[in-house]
Length: 76
Figure 1 (cartoon, rainbow, N blue to C red):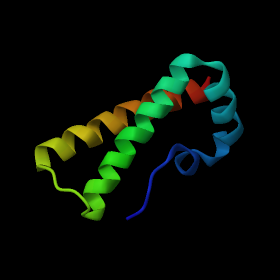
Figure 2: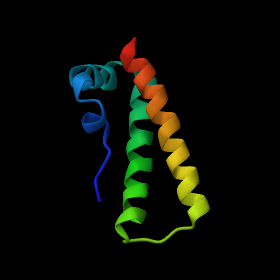
Figure 3: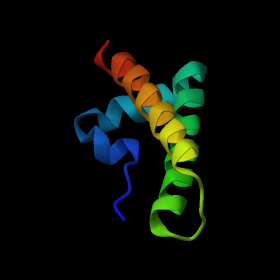
């Protein structure tokens, strides 16, 4: 199963992601939360753990929300 970490999602922002992680606490919190949710989704998709469809839907919605917020910060 393919992973969707931020460096692969936004390769054009690699340097800015690094800079914001080290200088912006809010960005760092979003970055960490994104990767925690992405890791959890990957566990379920790979079959190492089971969950309900409802829970998976909630996780994917949360991941999309975080990704949108992170992208908005990267564009500025």
